[in-house]
Amino acid sequence: MNEPSVPRIVVASDQTLVADVLCASLGDFGLELVSWHQGADPVAPDAHAGLLVTDLASPDCRAYADGVLAGSAMPWVVVTATPPPATWLEGFAPVHVRVLPASVRLAELADALHDAVEHAAVAGDVSCPWPRPEGTRR
Image (cartoon, rainbow, N blue to C red):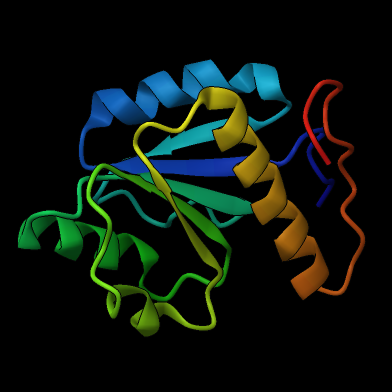
């Protein structure tokens, strides 16, 4: 299988519009984003990293997040307005999960996603085949 020209990120949110808007907004940062909706299988098997956007305040939202992250081996960036309980991430080791506040700027979010892709490349013992677009930090 040929590698895509840019890293592929699966975007999951309990609010479909949020996932779709992020897919449209982050494409300018050298990423290919694919919206994933609950019930669709599988969670983009050819993705290099994931972005999960949900409010972790309610048990339903935490259950949604658990369902998205469960069994995933790829790194994830979670954007939430509510910090998760300290013990929440323990269940996902060895999955690399980085939590960012909902106030994150798009450029910072793109950098975190590029970091996740690089983490996946290092964890897979290969060099990252995608250069970061000009203007993003390294």
